[in-house]
Length: 163
Image (cartoon, rainbow, N blue to C red; front, side, top):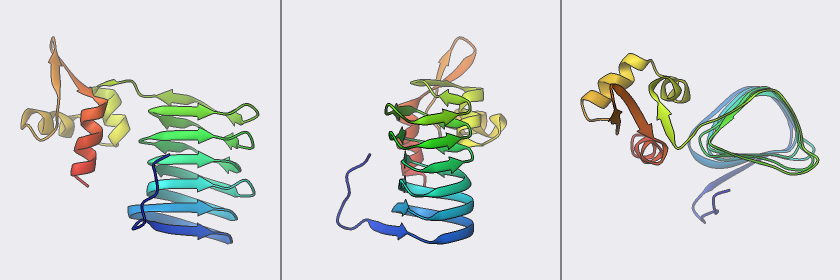
């Protein structure tokens, strides 16, 4: 998980909450209680050992130590500690699973190079828009034969610069 800086925002939730939480600025979010709804966070998200979360989660780096019922999508790393119980699908670039973790669902991992359809799914953007961005030079892309391919590291930099 990314190193903490002194100027980073930290939010520690140790209560029962319901609804949608969206953080458009990077934050270190830790959930230790019960949460139901949808959760979208930039930065680091930690689901504590005693947490019970029923939500679809989108984040950058996500550490799960408690119970999560819902799909998890991360642009960085998803880490399942030995006490994690996940019931849902996982999408990520990197996955770390400690012995003892339970994961029931599908796992999709993105490779170093993404196809147009993989990038469309990864960014949740129509393929036509991605082709438009690539053709105009707004999005880094390479041609392999007649196909567009995208380097994951270049894309991570592009996403970071275009927040």
